[in-house]
Image (cartoon, rainbow over all chains, first blue to last red; front, side):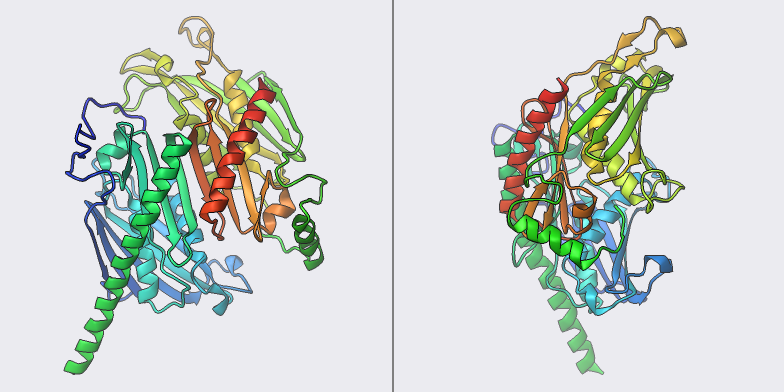
Length: 247
Length: 257
């Protein structure tokens, strides 16, 4: 948000540097069940972001003092791989990744039926292979699909996407340049069946009108992401039945 | 912030009161607790503030030292915010490196200060590309009775507003006041059942399902937000929170002058 550039991010015709309009998201590709060992997994590409999510559990909760006698806890670990950004990222958790892990865990807790598994832990690992703005949303989108792929009972799947502002325009799904040189970023995740918000952050500078418009764009796009998530799970299931009939 | 067991009686009492629009400490749903601020209370710091928000108390200190700028911002000063939830403040806080609650707290406060451009970091440059002022804001919770977010934000903002750049101490010119452009104020609300309340105390925080912190600038524009907690908020509730953040933010800004 703090950078400055002479680059024109949105031209006179409202076109963005990657050829999108203000209300368009980047191409999204989701695949469920991409890893063997994990109980559930998903791979997500949103533009140039490449994200893997894996779910283990419900399983015994470690460390034990975190156990909750009434429900399972969700322990998400968001990690950026060292080569995922232009400068090498120092491996290991930093303050940013700890915060993101926390808010993603909380967002997922709303939809997972944690009360079915007292004392257990559902561990969600999100690895950012390649980052290009919007990794927390891509990570949460992938984590929801991985949880469903693991067969964990859920009320709904959580889609996430960001809206923001660059060159004074409210834009959907900021890319790296728009994120770096833009004026605001609003990542948001919802429960699609009710439109309730389970993740919301904002930084930058926005008026009430701009913010309302950003929320409208993001909520609308979340429903599109949701369709792609469901489609990925359906493909995963049909693959299983086909494999089953071959045997 | 912590996970203590609360009795059903207490929980029901809070919920029942809220249904009638009142709270255990006599406040209405949108009332803040009493704010007391003492600035420049630490002589060894370059700026400091001790803030009481009802029975929550927080201290923030600013240390400013010369250092090397980041490679991608060679002409900009450096601003860093940290927070610690020390065992003194509550029986559920533990010593050791900052946990996720402390990190989230620090980052939300940091975001409000940074994104509002409160400190003009261009004016913190000493020699372009070589030396800049590095400004460290450290926040410690002293007494915890809910809503550390707003108390910490207020303490950090007040400490920065009163800070002096110690030029003479380091032979870098005269002492001068911190270059301040605006006053970012955060307002935090939590959701209990379907009720939204401003400035939750400890008990209210414990039984709440979701939290939303909204930081506004002097123009009432939004500069930072953070939703927390395992619950959700509806779009209508979000709208209510935004209105209240602007209104309460203006009141607090007036209070600190």
